[in-house]
Length: 67
Image (cartoon, rainbow, N blue to C red; front, side):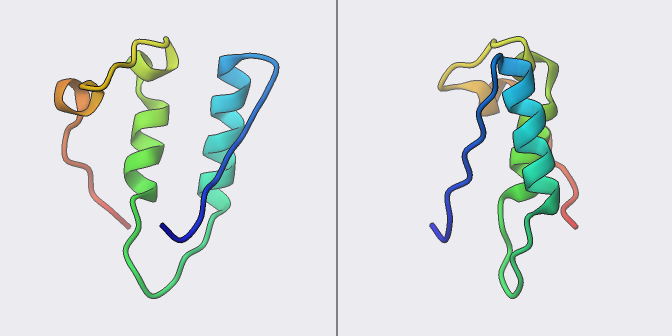
């Protein structure tokens, strides 16, 4: 782990929006990161609705193209 990013808000949706904004502005050079995966998870309707379990990725993950 090279960093931890935390966002908070008065409700789940606000916290998700703040975290997405922070991830879009995040810059790490020289190595691949999981930022595109985190953005995809945060943007997924099931995650935004709070439908999250430990098998979220196996149920909802589809390969995404990274930058």
